Length: 409
View 1 (cartoon, rainbow, N blue to C red):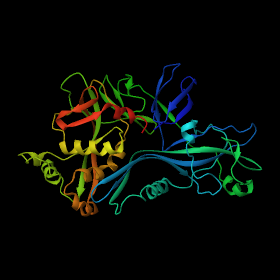
View 2: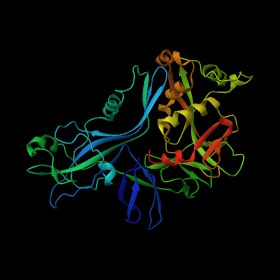
View 3: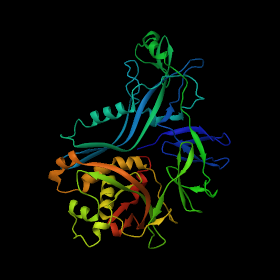
View 4: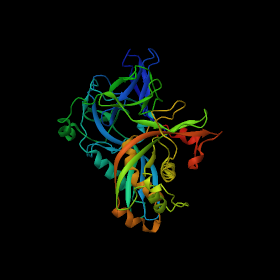
């Protein structure tokens, strides 16, 4: 899976730059200034054009979804990874989708300075999700007890066209059927300049002024000086509560997990003793287990769908018993690239992954209600082996190649 390449300019010195679709941290190769992208709503891009000079461009919008789909069935959970685009305006005059163009062209952000006539999207994001599930669930056995999309990237892409007696594709300079100016005139009355804007934030710690650290695809930045964690939100950096479990040795990698405490209705799952019973774990509840609160543990990093639920269920059934210290840890940290909201959407799927007996799952899922109450970002230490990162206390091993291949998800 490849990511978009986006052409842009350094917000500090104006030098040309290229970003990948998943990049959220940018460092200019000329002035070396680091910036963090604050993205309001879905990312918006325009495809490049090869129109003759003097032609007024018409930009038609498409919704684009890239992410993981999950379908919970009575005895199993089906999953798949999807990269899909569809019209954001229902129109028979324009191509239905973008096909592979987004993977072969260098894009630009659709910011206010872009010239041309931009047709504003009319179909809501909810219709994209509904169409997505309708298309990709057709081959899934019924009944579907629960469905969700996790770790998705939803964006709007504008494809360029122009009029020359007929509607012309400005990328290939070829007519689009026999579409005339009169046919699309009602749409053109709605055209406007792009309303979307992009903000670049300084990566200096708001608390102590130190340089914040993160991989280029990270949604969260850490300060090694004052041990604080930050995320871009609303045009500024907002403090985020984080913690870590101390590593037994200096080598290894810290992987981020969302620890989520929930209000659960429909089943009794308030403490560790309830988890032992509900998940049919091979152990006997000990004194004090009823006082240990139950948490969902969800990866705060993207991996392939079939691995994502496995890691979430394994971390949740094991629960963390070690001491948890405030703030990010020293050492090597894996980037946080799965937001909290996506983790919350996965809770029912995680529950379905570990709950027993499976033959009663249909009845259980009809009645269960899970509402997140509080969350904490926790970094867990993993030991490094030649091919894996291992956390023995959780009996969990994550292949190094799995993390590498997930960078463009």
